[in-house]
Length: 107
Figure 1: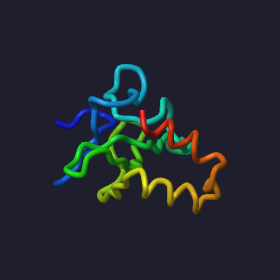
Figure 2: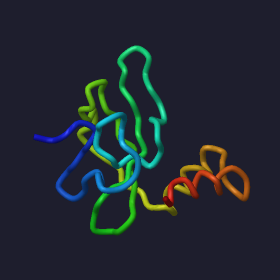
Figure 3: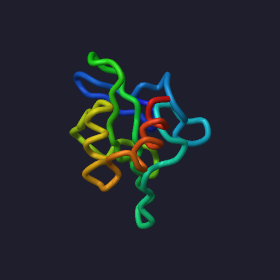
Figure 4: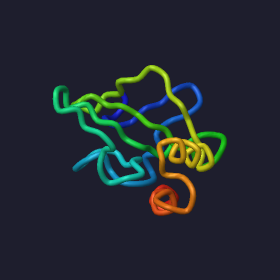
């Protein structure tokens, strides 16, 4: 049985030995100390997580329901360069806000 706030597929899994816990007493793996988004209507949360996989340090965005069970059946894994592209396309590129955000991710 999988513990709450972890996800795995045939190739990757949440790296529960790294990062912040997903709340009191929960598995580690979160890059940030809080979810990126919490849906008021369902309690679902979106987390940026460290991923253990064959490529080294990679990340994924994972939705969980209010009890900590994954909401997704598919995943998208990204490395630091992919994350930089995503931040740039969200308007945080160049030498501005992206640098502190990436520093938080590298921890």
